[in-house]
Length: 549
Image 1 (spheres, rainbow, N blue to C red):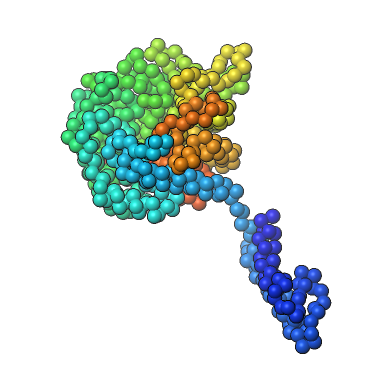
Image 2 (image 1 turned 120 degrees about the vertical axis):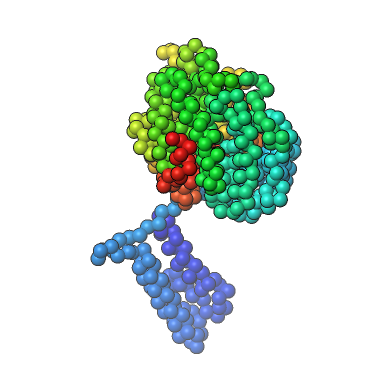
């Protein structure tokens, strides 16, 4: 079908100049029917010559077109057909959404951390131009080179890491800013990003001046002092165990083993602590570095990326740290045994959580939807094949969390019905009905499609992206969190988190654009938990390897 249309269009373009009445007032040619020519005798021969020339041109064009379409394959002529990906138009729409979001940030919050799109103001959180740095590799991947250059110029001249604030979260600044700078350097090879990454990495070393082997969770960049969060004396599992991809890569590009040593020491310690079927509590003592038995076990907030980084850190350096692989497989076994449940009446697979009494609660955060992608990525790298079955089931559930809501957007948390007489599989609770444009489902759809090649995952991504377009896009520019996905009323919150551009839109673009996605083969690149691609060291880096021995 596309071939016929393209060919027909080409032929029509050839005829077009000669079929217009304005061609010759005294001699009009009806070339489409090749009818007789009505003109003066002196022009008749000229017209015949023109007709003959056009026929020769058409035959010549047809011949060369066929030669181009037919390829010789061992003496046989094989028809070469170019298939146009129908999702490319969606990728273009995602790119436009990114540009719209970026321009709103640039106009109203340039140099600040995040945009408040409704009030059209900016927010300071880390003092690192967070949205700008977090978006660098997205701009590069989407070939938004002008925007990338403007960001690079600002970063070169003004990014200092000198905010005098005691409450800068080490985990967030590591995955978003350090990860963003390292990824931008890996893609562009522009040294300014490496220099800024090294400056930040050096300042972050103060976080390891703690009472235990685990780092403090907050830091003051100006004073280079660190401490616990003001509301608790505990440290969360995810915050202390999700710095390693970035620290390892910083070691790889600087040759300074200190960074990898600090990260490796944490994961080696967590390998030794008490677990529940391979699963860890979310809270740890700042004094002893041991897990708090009363705290919950979850694949959601404060636990999630520990399990993600077990796998990805193992992959990052050539699969040399066997204890990480062992811990990851044990954790997935624990998920299957203790956390997996099935809703009623439809039988959707969900991953619940254990409360302090180790009783499974049939509740799941949207954050858990990172797990299908991580499981699939693990199977790609040789993990047990049955992990993909869990991934496929959970992926369907994550999509249903969108599809079954009136706005077709997922809430932050849902509760699953397990009673045999239930009529609704998925329910929501007050306080958890917002959608903050999170990336986890789009992320997993990207992985699931790339690994299974099942186009259903692209269709689901299309539906989700269109819901974002309908309910999150503001006429004044930018995108804003949705207050209540269960309400038909349109209300938004005045926030556009940096992960909207850095993760959600990036993963959507890679889901729909085969060419862009092919630049990041899974045996060469690993994405950190903020969607920043970092190179895999297929030949193990000896410094990183030493840090994990």
